[in-house]
Structure formats: structure tokens, C-alpha cells
Length: 429
Image 1 (cartoon, rainbow, N blue to C red):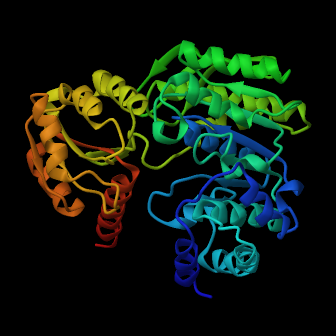
Image 2 (image 1 turned 135 degrees about the vertical axis):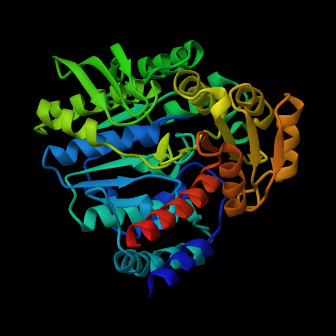
């Protein structure tokens, strides 16, 4: 099986399925020897920040000398990004071998009327890969929610819940309390939970859930925060010690809260016997990278702010670092998001907008999105094709301006691929 055949096989299964808990995942992993039970894991849920938090934990553990596995979603450019060993996406050959190994179990489940979904298959591939590669620690990001997510068959050493906000309401509930309760579903008796910064309503639900399970709760808060346009520095506690002037190599003040959640998880792993010295924490946090999250590509900034909490964080960054008259927004969003609210927040912070259309069925039409910005007094034009939209945005920004590409991660992936190919070409010539 080739890499392309493997990816086509992955995409050939049910995109989504009817959920009755995590029974599908249990049935699939039972046929694969329950590979997940051999792993030492960190489980991370949340509406925003969970990917960045996972990346921070992974990078520090690697600096501490551990062999790491990282499972995240969605991918930005290539499917292989979802499964990483020591920070590197799995090779095409390894992905093909994993699919060959797991596919007979998928077929066996199908014969019994158990319809494995694409995300369940991807999760199984990650578990089998991490067991096969004998990682010391695997960091597992929840896909959607928590309680019914396929990743929730694991028993980790520590669970983390980053910021809970309004997103995926059609699946998780229409209030912040209902969504928080779904996220709290990853809590398990005897497993400490780390809470990132939370809105008051979500915080109350999470604390009540932890109390009901008699789960130890860890909460850390950044102090004396100082930002640059490319990083954030702050003081925080770690494992009973005080860390001063800890720098995180990701943009935006919200990353300090994500970093504190990561520190909480690292502290629990330390108590479990892992050797994680402060210098490993400092190096890992400073060197962490996470594509598509306020990522700078020359005169373009990429940010996958695709829900209201994410857009609020992006707006805070704009207010501090991006002068309104210098910024052209390049955006594309999904129909099932709060697009009007996001358009309202962003309209007053950019000079004009170019609306593209991500190449997925759920994408909002570029013209419809442009109308949403126009309703809020922002000059907007529709250029559905991503490459043409990037050219249009650059032309509007001019030499002294900045293009802010923000919205759906599907669009961010398309733009990032274009920018990366440009850079590779310029490096060659």
C-alpha cells in the first residue's frame, strides 16, 4: 500500500457516525489488542488552546529526553501531521503500514454492524503507532467535546481542560454550562485534572464535576506577563518551584494561560516519576511551534480563529500589535459557525476584507461572507479561490501593509501551502 492509497482508505470510511458512547472505539481497539493500555498518556480537551497546550507538553517532554507521541486534529496541510513521533509527522511508509495493520480490524467491525468513522480510525492508527514505536509518553488531543469522543477510552496520567467556549453547539449543547459538562467527561477517578483559564460559568461546572469524582484539581495562573509580537514571558509555579521570566515562543497573551495548563500537566508527570528539569521546561517552551496559530510568514500572519473565543483572542492581538489601517483580512469560514458575530468583532480592526471559500462542503460562500462584513460597515470583496484571494489581499495591503489570514483551518492550510511553496521556490533561486 502506498501513502496515497492509505490516505484514500482512511477517507473512505464513514466521515461521521451515530454515537452511543465510545462503544465503536472499544470494539475496534479490542481487535487491536487494546494497544492504548500500554501507553503513558496525557489527555487534553477544551474549545480553544488545546492544540497549543499539547504542543507545549510534547516539546518540553522531548527536551527532557523522552520519546514522545503527539496526536492532534485537524491537520493543516497533510494528514500525516496528526500523528507525530518526537515532533515529526509519521512518514508515508509508516502511515501505509499502520493502515495495513489496522484495516482488517475495521473490516471485522463492519461485518458485525459496527461502522467505524474516519476519526475513530485515525485515533486507532495513533494508538497502534505509539505502542509500536514505544514512546515514553503520548499526548492525546480530544477531537470534539470529551465525554463521547473516541479518545476517551484511555486512562491517562493527567487530564487537561483548556478554555471552554461556545463552539459545536449542535453537538455539545447550547450553553457554556452544557459544553463544559461534555468537556468534563474526560475526567476519571484518581486522575488529576488541570484546568486552564475559564469563564466563570464553565469553571463552576468543571469544579463541580471534579468534586463529584473526587478528582484532584490543578490550576496555575501567569503573573507579570510581558508580550512581544512573537512571544509571551511571565512568572509561574512549576512543581513547587517558582519559575521567573518563562518565555513561550508563540504569539498572543492567551498563550500564557495555555502554557500554565501545560505546566500543570508537566508537574503531574514529574510526580509520576518523569525527570523534567527546569532547563528542559525553559528550552521547550521557548522553542515550541504550532502552525496556523498567529504564525508569521513574512508579510502574512496565519491564525485559525474559527469560533468566537478564538476571534476574541485574535482581536486582543490585533489591538496590541496590528494597526487597523495597515491590515487586510483574508478570511473564509464554515456555515455552522457564528460568522456574523465574528465579522462584527473583526470589522472594526481591519482596513478591508477579502473573503475566500475553503474547499469543503461546509464552507460558507465567499459572497455571503462578504455581505456579513459589509453589514458591519467593512469594505469586503469575494474571491473564492484561495490563491487568487491571497494575491488580491497582498495587492490591497501594499508594501507597507500586512495580510491577516484568519478563519477556518481548512483555509489556513491552503494559504500555508501556498506560502511554503513560495518560500521553497525563493530559497532555490
